[in-house]
Length: 359
Image (cartoon, rainbow, N blue to C red; front, side, top):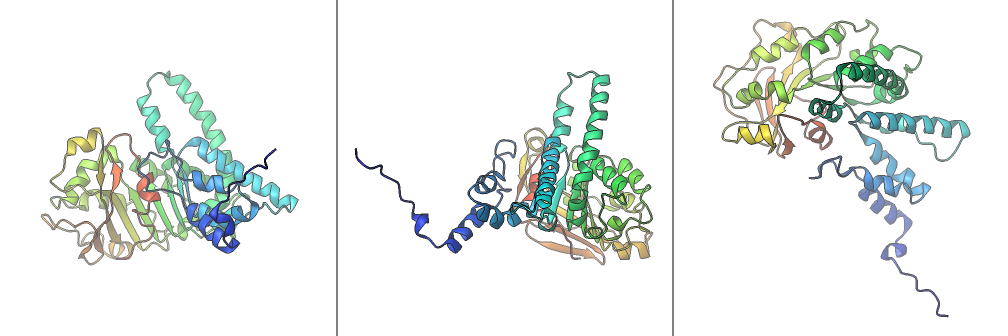
């Protein structure tokens, strides 16, 4: 019988140090991929490489965990289970233990895709939907209590109103380790309802270390309700004063002790473009950020120097300082956006929405 022929991989001749560099590079999440995240998991390569060996797993986990994108209910549950598993590893003193808390630098907590599915599905009775939502809230609050130390330790955080509500409720409990509080420097809130968010702000505890540490507060506009209004702002034909000052005037400045900038992020939609295509099927668009100096706004809210239309359109890849305390910036790259059934997750994960702003 002839001996079995074994294939020889070129990688087998490389030093282990070089192999680890290759694995580390290959494990980078593919957030800017053209495919939808539900069709191709951007973490899929990293997840596969974690199974190669314990050494490879420990090498790639810091980059794997740098940006955590939790965009579905089951994603939050899976991540909570992973944290509980790490806790068990720590108690067993297993070499599989890895400190997720120190590795996570950016975190997205929003069930935007689930919201869009619910908006499209009309087959449930209202009573059944309410009962289902109640039990989902109980499960989500439990999972959020597991995630809380990681959330409070992440320098950059994006949340929707539902997750923000649980963060505020859970902060200060025995689950919120004080050594992690005060690490969040950038908070972005997905604008599903400004009145709901402002109501949450009114219930902030005076001892909230979480809010006291935030330097940069960003609103990601509701694409359904606000696209048309911010289209006029990005076209230079309407002042941001009415819309943005309405949001800024009710911010809990007494608790936002470190706040430096307030920003609004929206699609860059100057003419000419096909607005009908943006509404119905989506377009590849640049992202625009309007940033306001919180310190200058608080000094004189009545006479803050809002820009008066018409004003110049900001070109892609440039930043324009319109006045003291007010600037516009447009990304060089584009991201798929649509007015309906679309989320900011890909734009944020790909780095098109900056975590920190410099005026």
